[in-house]
Length: 270
Image 1 (cartoon, helix red, strand yellow):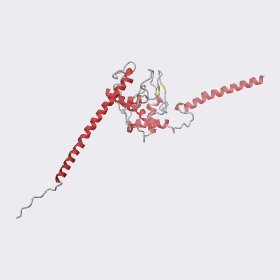
Image 2 (tube, rainbow, N blue to C red):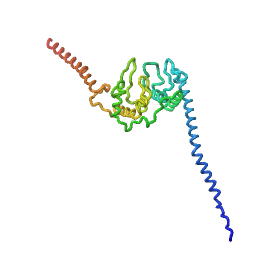
Image 3 (cartoon, rainbow, N blue to C red):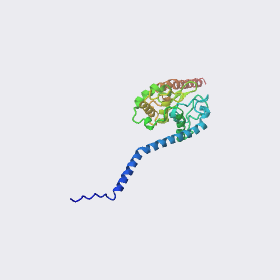
Image 4 (cartoon, rainbow, N blue to C red):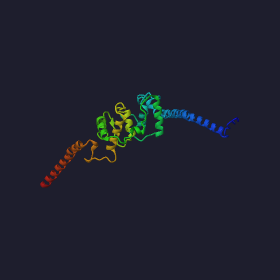
């Protein structure tokens, strides 16, 4: 019997094995290393944001809120207020406050959004609190504005008026006009309860209902909003307009009639 000759390996076999080994190693690296690196990069970026936010806080906030956010007689504690409260207060220009008063008014913001994010990161590091909402959380697209109107009249109209035009409160405080306020800031206000406003966390007012309220405010405060009754007088409706007509306009008509009668009587005597 002839002896079977040993099968020879192809010259490229070793190269193929080496490529498979490299691919397997690369696959393991792709499966494990990038996640660790991404986590490390995120942690590093967060630490840097907190450090930069701490510097901004020391310069613009510590004189009222304390060196560690513990609060003073001039400003409340910021421990546990969360990043969303910072984004609202600083993003609407209410903070830093120009001077102490019954309420901090809305004004042009002092910091850029990047700086606001750094301040928010630092305050969030002091204690757990509501985080800055994502666009998906506050976007009212597709929300039921009619249902939002019901929720608004139940929870908000007592202070903000039926159409969100604001109103006076006690001791120099007031509920601000919601016209021109961004969707994100309306959501953050409901989430955190700034100044005189009560907070409406998701346990009280779920995300879906917050979106519905935002949709309602956009509808009644938008550029296409109409006032069928004419001059809307703060959005109080036909009762306020009728009261204005009977008290002011009627009084003016009576005054004009009296003036005309007096002039006519004087002309006859002369």
